[in-house]
Image (cartoon, rainbow, N blue to C red; front, side):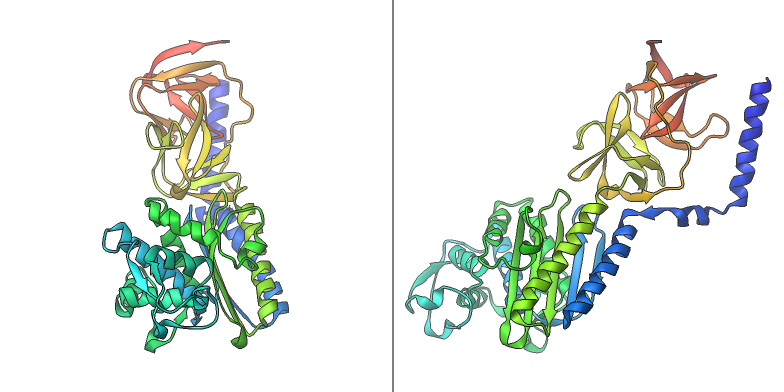
Amino acid sequence: MKAGRFLLGIISAFLVFSMIIPSQQANAAELTAHQDFTKKVSVELNKYIKKSGGVVMLQYQDLVTGESFQIKGKTSTRAASTIKLPLALYIMEQAAKGKINLNQKLKYKSYHYYGGSGVIQKDKVGTYYTIRDLVKKAMIYSDNIAFIMLKERVGQQNFIKYMKSVGGKYAYPDGRNLTSAKDLTIYAKRLYQFSNRSPLGKELVGYLKKTVYNTTISRGIKGTPVAHKVGMIPMDRIYNDAAIVYDKNPYVLAIMTRGISYEKSQKVIAGVAAIVNKYHKAKASAPYFKSKADVTIYQNNSKTAAIGTLKKYQTLKIISTKGTWFGVKFGKGTGYIEKKSVVALKKTTVSGWAANLPQIGIIKMKEKTPVVDKTISGRVIAYINKDQDYYFFKIDKDYYVVDLGGRVGYVASKYITDLSVSM
């Protein structure tokens, strides 16, 4: 009885203390991984860009979480050859729908000629190329003649309509070849998604990984596959690059420079990419996450076997990260939660963490079972599905104490159908 009154006293004091401190202050003390990323990358990038001179525009987006960061990302500037990326994407998407035959041959005519980058200019007028070969040359060699021939094949107005339909803001406004870092990441993200569902998307990504221009983003991110499309106008001091970075947590990045010499701009883009990549990787080391809504917990990193549900705004410890999934302690091993369903945290205000509790037995659920954060007036923080086994660490009157993602949780005995004790 004395122990019970003491426990009630502690709980009452805790409730009073909770009422004294507003929840807004507690939330403000949390630090999301993206907030940490934004703060640190902003400081370092601004110092770097200031020293570089000229104008630098960039847009970053995490392809797993959707989180983004930009510096003048919506500012328009000359697209140069980055315009070839959305055209190639449009053509490959049309081919995937059966509306374009990639084996169709197009004739190189004298009015298609354009100097600058590319290899077709060395060939004879009258040479035939398949659409697939033109796409390949436009991506690997940034071939200007291939671009002109492909744009003629689909029609400029159809191409403009496509860019606008996928979210591009700058689609030849007043006939000018303009774009923005944000528009370029829209096209890069769409290509990434297309490549995940279509062999033609994978083919296009393959061309971009083989580009002969590798002195910019790919130079700054060594050891990681990068599919990217550059565009430059050396005489006007323009250099741009748009990329899919195939990190363990992939992302898209567009960097555009203006007013920096041709040689220096490449080094600046590589340097900016290296800074972004450094903090992107640091972001992935967050130790906690918080659920955005009620989230399904799965037995493995797929959606084949649901084993429970995490309630909205709950915080758990991350024990592993696999692609688009976080692993947490759950049941007799690991449960998996989709990263896009939660917010990664560097710091948290949540208390009641489990600390090396000994496993003394296993309980089995006879129905969908709530897990509460305390035995008296506890809030439901998760549910364990019917027939799931779960390790417990202690028996507290009519409750079994469990480790739920690193937090102490309580399961009422009325939900248990089977019990195994090893103590």
